[in-house]
Amino acid sequence: MREHILGLTKKLVVVESTDEKKEKLQEVIDICVKELGEYTIEMFNQNGHPSILAYVGKQRPTQFDVIFNAHLDVVSAQASQFTPVEKGDKLYGRGVSDMKAAAAVELLAFKDVAKSISRPVALQLVTDEEIGGYDGTNLQIKEGVRTPFVIAGEPTDFGVGQKAKGVIWMNVRTKGTVAHGAYQWKGTNAILKMNKAINSIEMEFPVLLKEEWKTTINIAKVETSNTTYNKVPDNCLMKLDIRYIPEDWKTIKPKIEKMLEGFELEFLEFEPPQVTKETNPYFQQLLASIEHVTSKKADVIVKHGSSDVRHFSRVDGEGVEFGPIGAGLHSDDEWVDIKSLDTYYDILASFLKNLK
Ligand SMILES: [Zn+2]
Image 1 (cartoon, rainbow, N blue to C red):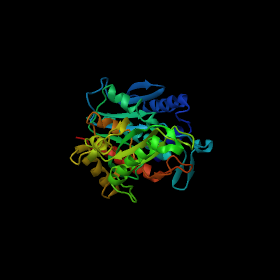
Image 2 (tube, rainbow, N blue to C red; image 1 turned 60 degrees about the horizontal axis):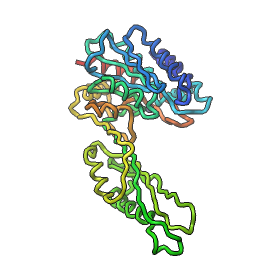
Image 3 (spheres, rainbow, N blue to C red; image 1 turned 180 degrees about the vertical axis):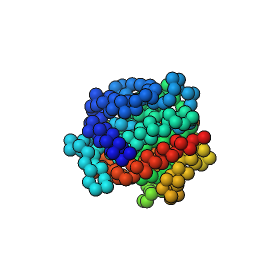
Image 4 (spheres, helix red, strand yellow; image 1 turned 120 degrees about the vertical axis):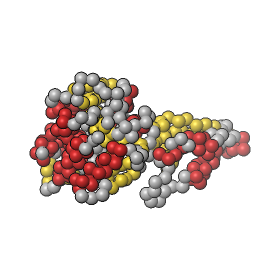
């Protein structure tokens, strides 16, 4: 199995499947379709981002027990990173950790097991996760693809990402009145008005000095269109990046609106969080399979950043991020632990075989 996994991973890594090279996105999808062979494959495409859904049988079921989800797009890299290199126990290259090796393992585990079990399962491969996942995972959900449990093979060092934060991007605006800088009493300074908003944010959401499972607000930018010294600015814009815990999903917006009452607010992005209930039987089965294969208790973790799993939250789907050992995602030094890919395969295959 080792050679098979490595072979497919390397085939995927050499394709420069970044968003800047749309034709390469189709190329990685084609490699996977060829590898899958006889499964039913639904093809999707939106804005030049192809994706597929593979399963057994002619008809797509109303819902799958489980979907393995993987993205085949990568962020841009130095040309040399598109040549995979093995050094000791590690495989280096763009996307080995995030997440072409995991995609290869998900595909092979699915291919080897899906036909021999009676439960409906699917493999979902997309090419736009790095830019939001709207044309891949989210499009498929819009087209009716459903599951109570998705596993996205994002790098987690075998931790099971049970929760991930949701995201709000928003603008806050203040208006003042222009005056000459020497006659400030004749105007109203929009930046000073904004200062009140900044103070409220700092009071209610103090900057975390260490990792904590709390909602955070990053003040990303404060600007005015004023460019000179001798003018009282009459406008100010502040950009906020809010990362909220799933527990705050229903309350965060009214809380922000109350905190910033009187300010002009514009919500640009409001992305759901990801959360899987302890009682989800597939979640429990995954923990059991990890324990069975590794002889260690599974490590349940939380993630501060988000993944494509969040799209399923909109339709009450649940899921986790769960992937092999690696590091250096999005960096010049990205690697995946080769042995961990065998373990990852064993866990996923055992998980599928034990579905009831
Ligand atoms: Zn990723």
